[in-house]
Figure 1 (cartoon, helix red, strand yellow):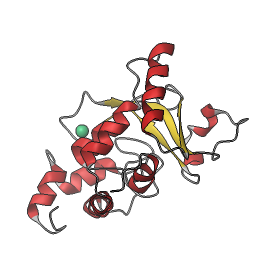
Figure 2 (cartoon, protein in one colour):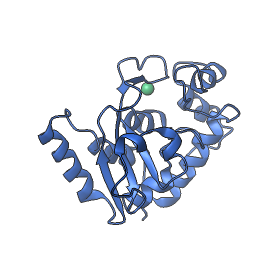
Figure 3 (cartoon, rainbow, N blue to C red):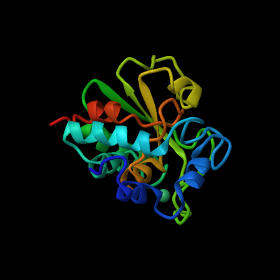
Length: 192
Ligand SMILES: [Zn+2]
């Protein structure tokens, strides 16, 4: 892991676009209405702090991205959905559960980094601490970001494995689609 001030760290995160323009694209009401990064957050600081969490747990962005990939059914047919649910449940800590919701909220979301135009994400599922979702609650309502942000759950989108694996990015703290690495490390038993 590079120190946060190392030019190579910045280059790794910027990829194809200068940092200031990238941050602007990530903020609310640019590439996405909800925003990938809070209006005052620094992208490098967010990525750096999350990187430390990943490293201290003894896992990698690649490992987390692969697990998030299991949350992606090949299609929304019943058999593919069942296959994905089983694949995730096999790997999930017993205190967590996974639900597929299909494309219930905002349609698709392209990756905000230029050059990743074909990576699109739709809202696909919810990872939740067991008991966080009451049996009589509608998954449709819960897949709304305003709900998720205050509870022990997170939304899994198709874009997420790409953001984590390719951009080392779990989204900003307090943004509705953040995939908190501590939550994921606990959910998938990734601590060494
Ligand atoms: Zn991308």
